[in-house]
Length: 309
Ligand code: ARG
Image 1 (cartoon, rainbow, N blue to C red):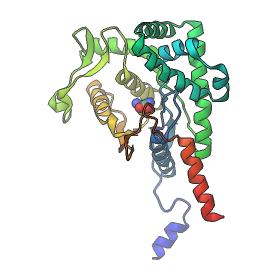
Image 2 (image 1 turned 90 degrees about the vertical axis):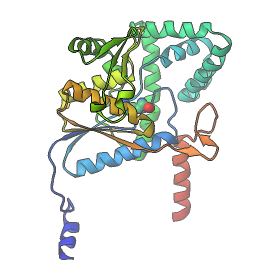
Image 3 (image 1 turned 60 degrees about the vertical axis):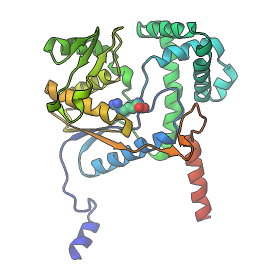
Image 4 (image 1 turned 30 degrees about the horizontal axis):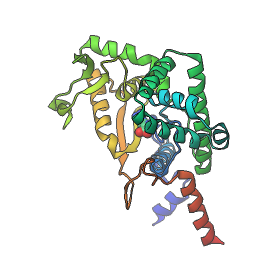
């Protein structure tokens, strides 16, 4: 009893202060899409881990690894030039970006040349075309503005917002060095990291694709580059990733690849959670059954107010 009271009186609740640095990768939404209820858990579970880890004495680097790179930007650029409603964009930028993107998918079914145009615009963006770069930056900016409003409301702050694009220049040299060291291999014109049973349960069934036949790097490649960067930049003792269950295999592959590479200075942890679904099935913006995070928070606030008023 007395010991518990003393513990409660202690500002640190009697917790021994831990040493070391921890990177927590959480929230990490994709740009040009409105955050919906599916993003709530990576955001709040990540923020809870962030608070607890800091309270325990670790130095924490909260990094929002936003999805700000990839082929969706070519589609958005074509859609923007083709059928943007400027007034709607002015009033609700992300809403309008979502609308023109969804429209792209519909129109592309009837007109296959749109996909080629989008590929062309993606390639131009990646090659540094100034107009496409400016549009892309704008998409990120309006998205971050809205994300930041939600983060402010939830009382969350990140130390870094290093999106996927931050690692872009590291990808080709990384793949080349993995090929040179023999960890990666050419397979059917693509580059993969093959695994064996000894690398971990279930890993032998599929290699990790890190460069497509057309030369494009992929999500796993970016995550490898991100681990390397974080080890060099922060020398953390642990890196924690907070995503839903669908990325379990992805992180098993990434972690196993890091082990093969000897990148073992930090303990890599995937903190995953289950998928949210509605009575009528999984949520999808196409099916129109997505609950926006802002609406959800508004409703929670209304209910809370009704209780206290
Ligand atoms: N942007 C990704 C998504 O929405 C999550 C990124 C998680 N972090 C990472 N380092 N892969 O699915």
